[in-house]
Length: 585
Image 1: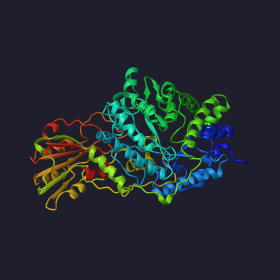
Image 2: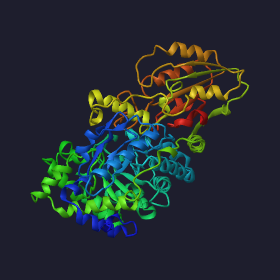
Image 3: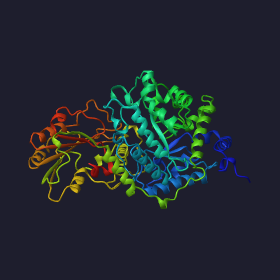
Image 4: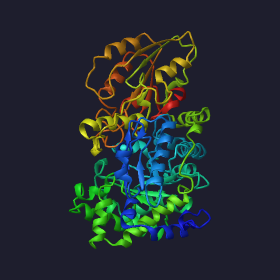
């Protein structure tokens, strides 16, 4: 019996796609446009066949966050991805493997992976070579465990610092977004799709300039400004670099939800720019056409509108596509032509990336967070730091200092050196979803997800200072206050520490994440830009001791400092400097 054309690696991608499409049933086609969360198919860290079988019986397009939404180690992640692919090859008629996608904003968002400075800090380096090297590390790590598709970079030009996701962006300038985002894409996609990761430019388009800086709120952008400012980084990524994927924004643009906007997702993206990759929905965005935007009245209508606009794959799980889409096609409500063009794009990606020909990885050679990887993280963290003020040359601090006070809510905590799309932040979100369905995320059933203190070697800023100073320098720490709190109970101890020190180093700012106690990150929009809580009062209390103050800011957005900018002699912005941040600061 001859080998089917689609399984013949010597044939062209177009030939293989065409042959496979002719063999597929409608159910098998719509399965390629769907997805599911990893927790829906695992028992702890291993594949649960009883859970997986109903979800993968006809195949699947994407599997969501195998590493990012579980506690699997890198080796376990590789083994789990292999098990998923083996099940599909052994148990489905056409043996179509899955695309494994992950979040990769500031590194592959998974247990044990290298965590780089948050994007706004990377942008502050203006270093395209280091940024490309960062992308290359992410590419190597994610590919080594069997991943294929990264939901990054964020190419949103943002000019309203109240928006919580400023930290994920390259800032307010379209050119800088294009150059830095382009460097990231070059690194993560690599020179060969067989070893590269498909990058996803998001959130198409205008997501960073919504009303009031509020997440999901409408954007109103004149056509010329849209073209010259907000579309520019995406166009550069598509035309100059060959960006592999696009993700829609949650918001509406001039009254039309981006997930329903054919002008954006098809006419401009494909018709004008020649984009040939896949368009994936932001999580739950197809269903939100009915549940948030209220422009559709059923899941079938949402599927029709999204497909017609140009969304190929529904993420993070199949809600409006899948069986709903199958029934709509069979009834004549949705054209099979819309389905076919989306399926062709998904299959093309799978063939181009070599997933059909090499679906498995060698779990024994997985290597994460090497000294070379950490060196890139350190260099990026070091170059991301911005000196805002140095009155009287207080910095660099003298090595002859005999006493230092280290004060502030971000001084002696490792968690807060990381941005919102990092493993510890998202694990917190998934844990919260168990009890209150945070941000609409489904509560995982039958899976225990726990926080990890040892997910990556890192130390606090306080420990970094201790490691850097001489043995003759006495260091006193006082927290002073929490990141966001009205309590001033710790002020007295902080003031006393400052009075008895030659210099007071204050480490202040945000906590990034998606949960209620966070002040920066997705859905963490703010009405004002001062330091959160009573932090400004603590800074004043320490300033009034007369001890010289060095203010270290760890924030996800620019902050208003008012009198602080005039009176505190030394101020640096460290953003969220990640695993090598303490050494860099």
